[in-house]
Length: 179
Image (tube, rainbow, N blue to C red; front, side):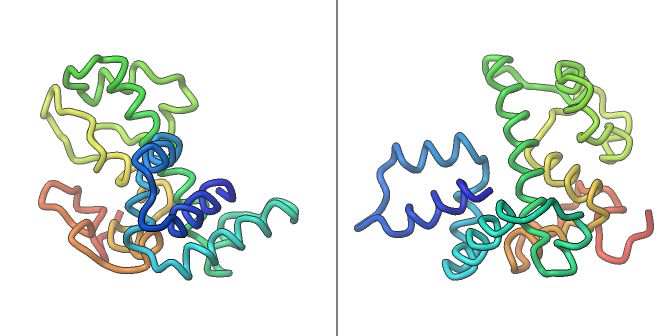
């Protein structure tokens, strides 16, 4: 994460703007990092860089301690980058063909598969062949973290937005919903 935030800080310093290749490098290594850089204030990106650098110098900390200290975004972003990277890899392997949820998960190794939600928890129900989408990566991170989508968005982007809810989202992902 320290490398990512350093790269984002460096991109922000590029005048008049970063090259396409620099943007592609960051986007390939950390999927959705450019969205983070777009929506999170530059001062907060720098603060996240400093916090991730400080984490390198100290012993490992439980996620709950990071959350209490106001740094929950760091492990949440790490999880989201991993899920989106897995999704990108699955899409490349399928050569552009639609990747259905069940088939995609079957191609992941057991540790990676354990981070994704099954179709029932995602609320896909009986929709056989439902595609695995970027939204499912966010939902999986929210579920594993015990957050609603609005809470996840607030942690990741430090603001609310249209990404907070979708009519297709399962009931558990809404603020105040009981699991």
